[in-house]
Image (cartoon, rainbow, N blue to C red):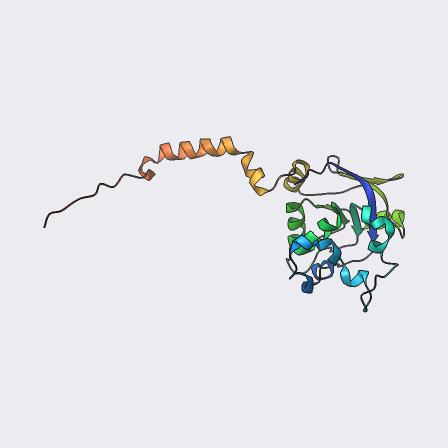
Length: 211
């Protein structure tokens, strides 16, 4: 995964709470291979009317939304089913960060494993960021090292689990997190084997009997 340290790019305001994974990518699109680009399905039923035409006033249909790297929403973002495709849709759209007061637990874990930063802010700070952005994409500066988000004179803190922060800063997955302890694991394995020699496999001698 590509490491995340600083994201300095347009951000889309999405002043909605309880945006669940079925909204992020409706189930009917999950039969498609990811190679088609799941970004086209992101929030599909909010981006389009009943006839399938784009809703011009919806934020992701704004001309500058294609350059956005961050999404700002209200509480309980990513609730619902555990479908990882919801994260695929956000990442394939080009997003690297979602800012909200709270996230669905499984969604947040899936996000980190796919290089998407779930930045948790207070409800008051989320509202301040949404107000600062208004009705159109605006630039947000997201600094994962200092865990600050800023735009103009507004600067707010965000939280993220330390392990997730480490993974995103380095572009690591779970295997990479384990590999950083490779020497300690090897020492432990060696010590364990020396203390318990009876665990070592003993060659089996084939016994041939005569009838």
